[in-house]
Image 1: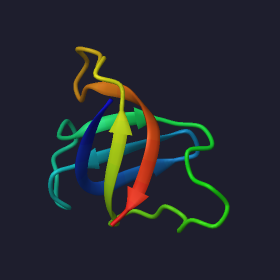
Image 2 (image 1 turned 180 degrees about the vertical axis):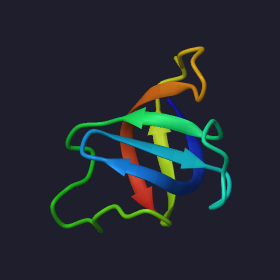
Image 3 (image 1 turned 45 degrees about the vertical axis):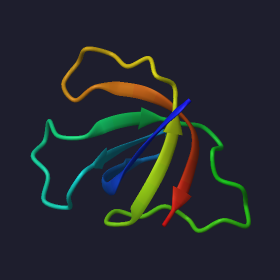
Image 4 (image 1 turned 180 degrees about the horizontal axis):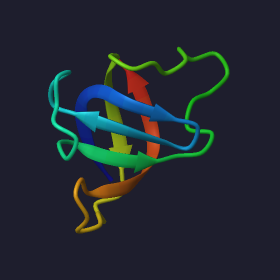
Amino acid sequence: MVTFTGYIVELEPTRIRVAPNRDAEPFDGIVFHWEDVLREDETPLAVGQYVRVEHDEKMTRSLPPQATAHRIDVL
């Protein structure tokens, strides 16, 4: 597992895009696919939050690259 830290710039029910800064270009950052990564007692995700995402090292060659998130921590 590896981690990526940045800001949530797009948020959908089963995927998020996390980029190094808030005013990222559309192809900046990494798209993470996730399901039930957060526990019920954790902070809900929102655009603009600073997060650390634990994910597989395997990433697609698409732009932006995509990976599967295993854990998302709001910092």
